[in-house]
Length: 128
Length: 128
DNA sequence: CGGGATCCTTCAGGATACTG
DNA sequence: CAGTATCCTGAAGGATCCCG
Image 1 (cartoon, chains in turn brown, cyan, blue, purple):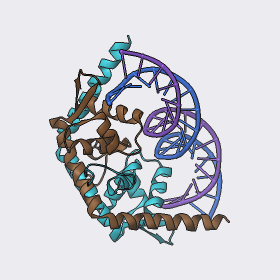
Image 2 (cartoon, chains in turn purple, red, blue, green; image 1 turned 90 degrees about the vertical axis):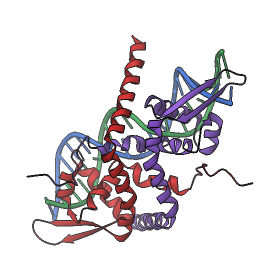
Image 3 (spheres, helix red, strand yellow; image 1 turned 180 degrees about the vertical axis):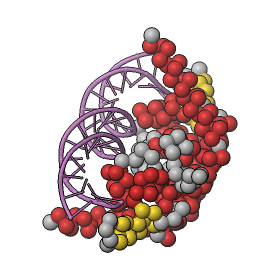
Image 4 (cartoon, chains in turn orange, brown, cyan, blue; image 1 turned 60 degrees about the horizontal axis):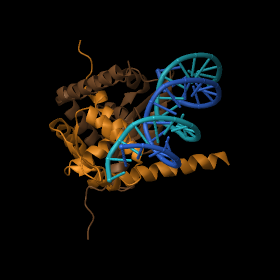
């Protein structure tokens, strides 16, 4: 008898895709790069709040994963440009879909956050 | 002059959607529930490796967010059933799309993981 | 300008044991 | 069967300083 197909086994694709969603910045870096090759500084400015450390760290990761290509120009001042590889482009597809949904459904996000806020208030009111 | 639209500001929808992606189990719980109402034990079995603690914790969160409805049946042994609310159903849409992509692109996931493995090996070879 | 190295804090999340 | 309460650890990620 076949197992129900809603079971999410340890190494199923649905779990594995979370790799790029886990890091706080990974998917956003990919998304930004989908607009075209970009220099480090541009990326930094495109992601307000990111620290230098996290930026380079995530860039190394996606580079190691073969999702992003890093090109160094030996000039002064130094110039480095990042761009999506073909593999990276494939991964951006579902991310863009997700982000497009988010943009189109900001109201749903509001509702979710309102609910959470209310339940948090209710919980703290108990403690008094 | 308008700013480039690849900038991901602190409270843009693209960042806010990460709320449901951040938790290790949140999106998977929602995905499983998209197959229909389910009891705690069923959910537990649908997500091999999840601990009781994380299961209930995640369920409380999505319940507080208004994404999931919790129904208690006062019988012995106790029976509790979880189901998606209309809001929850909206959030499952993009998740399902993401998961469908993952299932259809397992090869890309393999490639990504191979790349990461190789670069990790190369790095450790340096250290010897 | 781009990036490596360190230190430090936080907290998600797992293990375990107990209750009704 | 469903849920709560502790305890504890790893690892993510931020701040900071230094280098070519």
